Image (cartoon, rainbow, N blue to C red; front, side, top):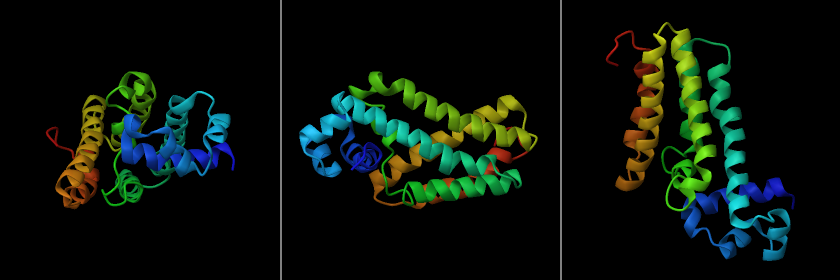
Length: 185
């Protein structure tokens, strides 16, 4: 098994247990590697594994979430395509957000720069689409931040309630909330 394959297997462990709960035995089992092989691929231990997972998520964001925003089509269609990809990525709101989990506890300081960059990239891409649609830049930036906040909050709410309706509603409303000509949207 190569390092990339191991990283894809580690994602679920960090997503399920967070950084603190992702023990080396759990990570080793998920990767299908003995501890020595795991450390061969990740000599920096669990911190290097989490960093690799964040790099993987950053590449996934670019390929799956940002790509539809940068594709051809109307801003509304591009936002719908992104929302569809977000829906699949988070399994209709049933999957926890790894970015949120790596923003908490002891992991927060260590991984904050990477998490921050991923969120900034996403927000900026959303704001760019809104600006292309004629929304004033400052309003577009605020709406983009609100959109990511609502998506992330809806994921937490879906888990807390055991119900994904709010997540689906936020994604469905995303194009209108970003592109509305009214300043208050």
